[in-house]
Image (cartoon, rainbow, N blue to C red; front, side, top):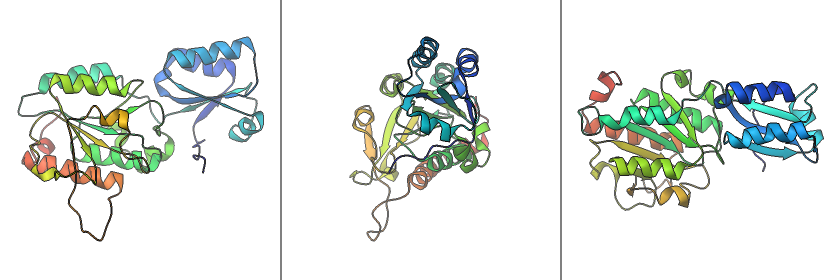
Length: 261
């Protein structure tokens, strides 16, 4: 079944999309161009999107006509509900807190395609004191209006970052001293037996694929969450909430009483 496209916030037209790409590319989730259209300016705008690491899809004109009710000149851009944060300054702000009494905590929803699950993960992350949510630019849901609605307004309460090379970003965190834990139902080690009072990256997998192999290779370890044998797995956002709660429990909930640095 093809993924449902959230069309609540989109812009169209060569001039409009080009201006957005030049002035605020971090708010663009993805771009759709008309299949078979070879106009030079359209190619130039598509190249701008590629250079910014923004996903570009090609669809027939009939699909673009359905996505945008009006003149689109063969290009439509879908916007996130708010501009995303640049990862590098967020990362550079978190790394110095390693080894302190208020260690950093980053959440990575990996290959999560349902924007409602992404929004629920953002809500749990903000409620339980995570510093940032970091995800891959390709193959995952964006901060669409549907995701923002599911986050219940908390998308403004936490740093939200999207990167083109998630493996590189995770390796940098691991090399800096973060513990990278993937939540996996088949992992032998329960999460509550892992020492979590340190800089953490909690990775939760997508709805169908779990944690993709290219992200799994970056992990320090995988851990499971205890559950009844009558049930096979938790919902992704529920699993994340339980993991975040366990991290807070081990830190005696001081994370929820402190302001982020």
